[in-house]
Amino acid sequence: MTLQIDLSAIAANYRALAAKSPGARASAVVKADAYGLGAEQVARRLAAEGARDFFVALDREVAAVRAGAGPEAQIFVLSGHMAGADLGSAIPVLNNPEQYFRDRAMRPGRPFGIQLDSGMNRLGFEPAEWAALKDEILAQGPVLVMSHLACADEPDHPMNAQQLAVFQQMTQGVTAPRSLAATGGILLGPDYHFDLTRPGIGLYGGRPFDAAQPVVRLSLPVIQTREVEAGETIGYSNTYTAPRRMRVSTVAAGYADGIHRRLSSDGDRPRIDLLADGQACPVVGRVSMDLITADVSALQTVPEALDLICPAQGIDAVADVIGTIGYEVLTALGQRYRRHYI
Image (cartoon, rainbow, N blue to C red; front, side, top):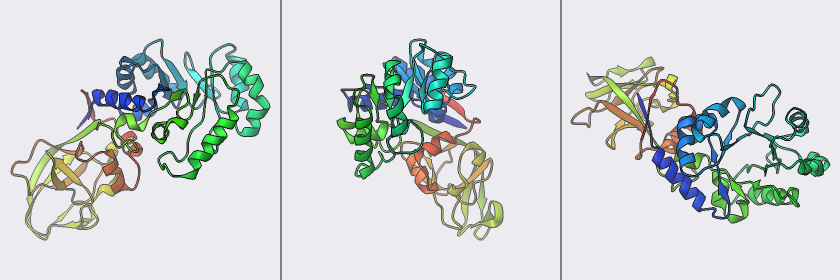
């Protein structure tokens, strides 16, 4: 099983998103092992592209990014300074008064960031907490003050303007760099860009950045091809019955590799195709732990591998079938794939 990752495409997507916010500095979100694609390799390529600021979710993600991005990069930890965290040279984005007092007691004089809750009700200082501590915190010199948009993927959603107004009000008088926009926020326009943008999923070829270059090709090796007679069943629970004589290939991958069972055929109706140079090979029967079966009757020659994700069928096309988002498709990919970087 091969997961091909195009680092040049990630770099091109970074440049394109940076160009959409020329008044701001573009960082890179590389949490969750760079959305499942390899934090060290992705950080190294983006650092070569000029990225100097990186965001991870947890302190244990820092080492891989540091190895790729180098000693001068700023690595922000979005979970902040949690009890027992080993932050090392990373910069915690503090989310509440408890984290702030812990950090200042344990890391006096060290750089820190602040996250404000502008309405998402997930992480960040609430307005009353921020009002009580704002002057003290600003006197300590945070290197970043940020918030996060809840509905940026929906450009017309009123929550976007509401959060923008709240963030502007909460950061009046702040001279530290400010950040509000991830990928969706970048696409909302310059009012949302402030000093630092935080592109994430757009780097990896996902919505809402529809102009993104495709980054991933997931190729699944064919183990066996057989003839199936009309009326015979395929896979667990006899959910698929061959309507005619057909050729069926079995490939080595399954839900243990992050390929969701909802990609199984719905009875006798395929939900998704595997692809051979763009030619459709419908998935028939159930996706099992390690195996998937596909109808290859239309192929003159069965190749050594069939693609689930490729330029003709991207991560969001797969996500649509499952009823989820491209983020989940990428981060669910398991560790059994041979990762090939180009």
